[in-house]
Image (cartoon, rainbow, N blue to C red; front, top):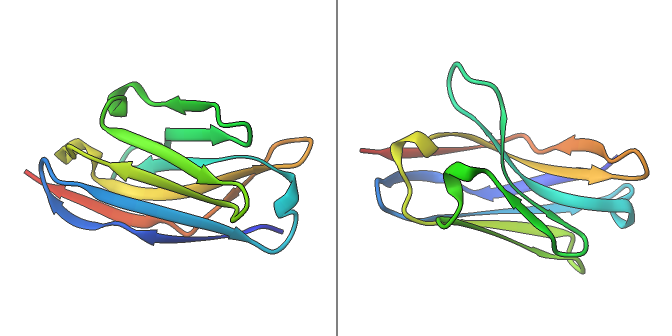
Length: 118
């Protein structure tokens, strides 16, 4: 069992910046294959925001490319998401994700609210 603890998020005006952080602890942290962030806006499905593998490969949603940057610290089993030039459509609950083990099983954080006012 991997536990994910998120921090960051909050309220910001359009064009502003926020930074999200997530740290994994306990369980099979040595089997983490990738970590990342998903978000869910009201009435919408959860969607990928950004993902980074243990080797450093990244994947971003088209809507955040050039504005968001994901980074990780393998030694600390942590992942950060720097969000710049935020837009109202970035509003939602952001969930930390870790993919673990041979089956790339998904673990989730409890979510942190990001609200961008226009």
